Length: 351
Image (cartoon, rainbow, N blue to C red; front, side):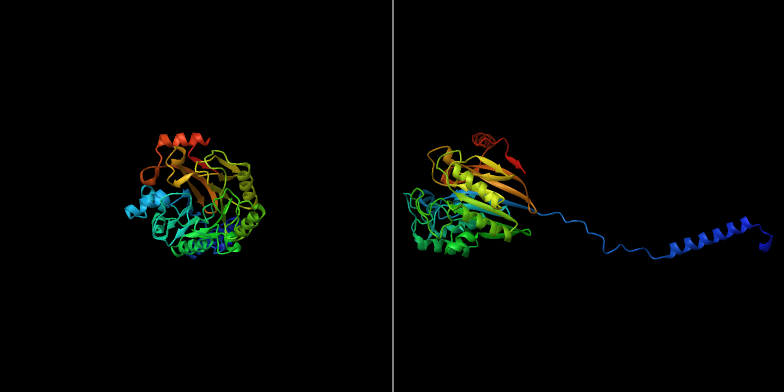
């Protein structure tokens, strides 16, 4: 029976119209295509990648160490106990305490060092990426040999830092990209010759020229994300840094350095922080033939842990130099004894 609209009251008509309209709205919504997300919405931020930088101390492949390598005909001999530790880092750094030479014969004794070029394959296999060549033995084989050392290391894809063919190159630093982050390195020596700190040479960056160092750091800062400054300075066989070392480290950080690391003392020296940045004043020996004392057979390697551009922590990894002048990881007991000597309470420093 058809509905006679005229017979309905006003309220009933309004109710029917509202019900009809709601049905049309529901149908349109159900049949409409699914809405697409706006392309203007921000994407989830990608987690910055983790990068590790391993710092090691003095590496001397001359004298008794060179004789051992030569007798074994094995350039990798000094690094065998730490091969995995060295290679696993994104970047590995050390101080090469001997200039390279084409001379085929190792030097057996004395304080004039010569590292045979054929020994460099051991450094390559160990995974070293950058080596400081600015130290008091840089001129042991003469000024022209500075160029040879630089060129030969570069030919083996190891970047030398702290020395150069001229003043500008010695102070320019080196840049190594890893995981989208640019790491910059600079290095300085308290002397150009093993004469107690009396010599300078334009091919070797001078630790004593603080204003120039700060200019170098500021210039490198503009081209990199992280700046690591190395210093070869201090007094041998001492635990505490000198006021000059402290002044240099603080000046480097004031200029923009993120980390300062040092060698030359042949003992592990104390660790400091300045403006929230770490200073490792002396890492001691890494490969050396100074077997006459417990302290000279101890070394410290440091693993810097970066998340993107942020230094999150540093792992303190002591080593002990044993047979054939080979460093090995320190035991838990040896580690605790070494940490006590440098007033450190933990193997991990958080930043």
